[in-house]
Image (cartoon, rainbow, N blue to C red; front, side, top):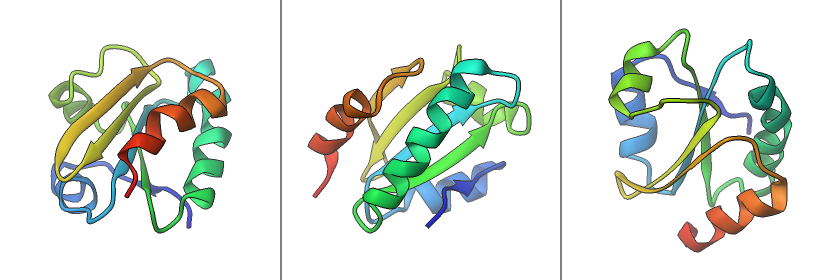
Amino acid sequence: MAAAHITDEKTFDDEVLKSSVPVLVDFWAEWCGPCRMISPIVDEIAKELQGKLKVVKINVDEAQQLAIKHNVMSIPTLLIVKDGKLADHMVGAMPKDQLLQKIKPHLG
């Protein structure tokens, strides 16, 4: 399953805060080099952890209010939301194994 693209608060609430599984939220932009580097990694993780983790992407240019509300100061910013609460957050591109180390403690 591909990552859902979120552009508004209501969709964020429905897809992220009300999710029955942990959610990896990827704040990114087209013009961001590190975002383009990490995007395929995020997509791979979405496929590998399907059913255990939901992945959503938020383009900060299309959803500036969401970026502001979630204190996104630089991108890529990745949030892990579990049970409607922020469980972890990371800033900047990182290798897949490092990202998985951050995600795995929040699964099941």
